[in-house]
Amino acid sequence: MEQERPSEKSSPATATMCPDSSKSSLPHLRLIIFVLLAALLLAACGGSDAPASDAEEAPAAAETATPVPEPDPTDTPVPVPTDTPMPEPTDTPVPEPEPTSTPEPEPEPPPTAAPQEESAAESAEMPGTGQTFVIVPEESEARFSIDEELFGQPKTVIGTTNAITGEITVDAANPAASVIGPIQIEAGTFVTDNDRRNGAIRRFILQSNRYQFITFSSTELTGMPESVAVGDEVEFEVTGDLTVREVTNPVLFIVTLQVISESELRGSAATILVLDDFELTIPEVPSVANVGEEFIVEFDFVARAQ
Image: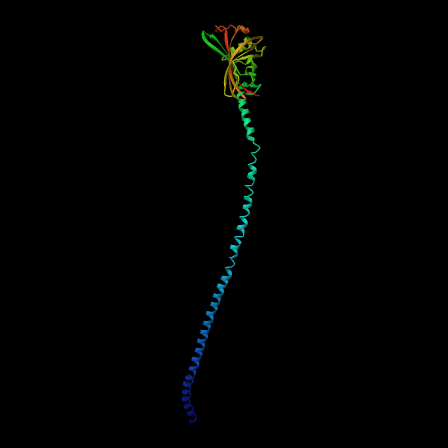
């Protein structure tokens, strides 16, 4: 029992020692806290130094990066001078041949062209010395007309054909020496407004089965001008020999000639013939009476140079 007491007494001692130990630990805690604060401050200072160095490195990098684009302006001027001088030499030689083009007119073709124009004008005034023009059948026509009474009524019978061939030779130095013909017409090709009349003309009047062509050749031209120019219209007389069947007689045609161009002539010719002069007989038909003794022969022609 006595031994247990001192233990009870010792408990208060321990109780008293605890507060002492807590008192002694406070300064240690404060020191630790202070050390931690100092460490935190140092850490904060160290972190601020690191970004600063990074920031310094960043401008340094920026400075190093800026010189990198600097060669770009150096590159740009390099092609610019190279491009500019290249076209300049090419442009300069281009005008250089210009003096070569200027001496080209030195051969003086215009004087040669001028006489050509003069010769063309001369040829226009006189369409070809001894030049031959050939009649174009498709654009030409020969016709005759004769008066009669049909069933007691007056009627003018007209027969036409374009089966015409022939030539006109023009003498430019002396137009009066020009020659028309020979001109031929196929006798069996005349057509009127009546088939029975057509048959009578072929079989009985012209006898085209025996005499195929009616032929004319000029012997003299009168009333021709001294010269003829393109665009002129000339009227003159042509005397020549006309052959119908076996009969040939001199006839005179009044001719109107137009010089369309140096290569084309257009004209018309007309004359009056008598049936008895060429021994032409009109068959007697009950419905036909009072056939005229004279008949008109006309030509409309187009002739082109060959």
